[in-house]
Amino acid sequence: MADSEHIVSSFDDDLNDLAQKIAEMGGLAEQQLADSVAALGRRDEELAQRVIAGDQRIDDLQHDVEDAAVQMIARRQPMAQDLREIVAAIHIANDLERVGDLAKNTAKRVFAIEGNFAPQSTVTGVEHISEMSLAQLKNVLDAYSTRNLESAHQVWVRDDEIDAMYTSLFRELLTYMMEDPRNITFCTHLLFCAKNIERIGDHATNIAETVHYLITGVPLTDERPKKDTTSVTPVAYAGPADAEA
Image 1 (cartoon, rainbow, N blue to C red):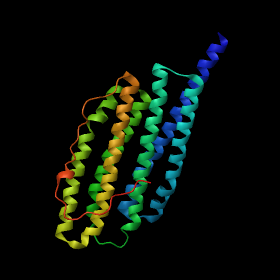
Image 2 (image 1 turned 180 degrees about the horizontal axis):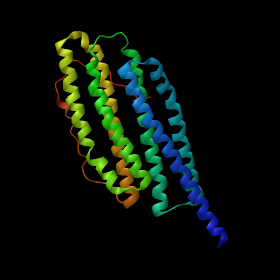
Image 3 (image 1 turned 180 degrees about the vertical axis):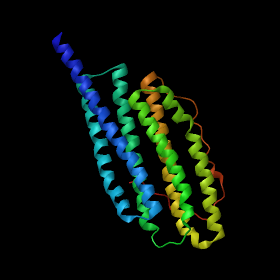
Image 4 (image 1 turned 120 degrees about the vertical axis):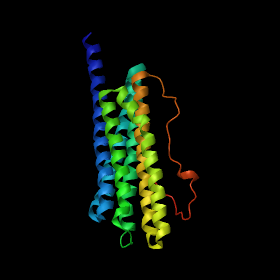
């Protein structure tokens, strides 16, 4: 009986360790997003460089989560809820790692826009969409830590708000580009930053779906609400797509 209790206690410790790693990743990812947009708004190259360097810690934690999860599955052979806990941690770690990459790519744009002409007001829309994505990320990580199904579902249904904001910003930046050719380079970089941030919102939605499966054991199969119409918007200028590193 004592051995059985020890095994259960040890497994709980392993699960708690996984959750702590996810919590650390989440906190870092939130900070990376906030700092990357702050660096963009202020054209702060020093802060941007810290964001780029800080991505490595998120990558390391993601590897730690995967390694620990594989070892737990091999040693414990978990089933049902226990297995879902481990699989959910792997999926969430992957999404948070991508969030870190997208924040890093946004920070890299700070160096690319140096010296380019554009009114500071053009950055405001990027800051607004980042606030929405950051709120989504915070809320879904809280939903994961508290196992709150309703909160996770609220994040899922609000994804279309970020899409609508991105579509509006996309059109606004195109207007700036058409009004003054000097805005083209700067606004193109902002478009890529905005797309990075919109995709961070998608990763928050991915995590919401993972939390739903973790709690219910049933995948969320409803069609995800989307309002990004930029793929059908005529574009007069386009550049190379961001490479996620």
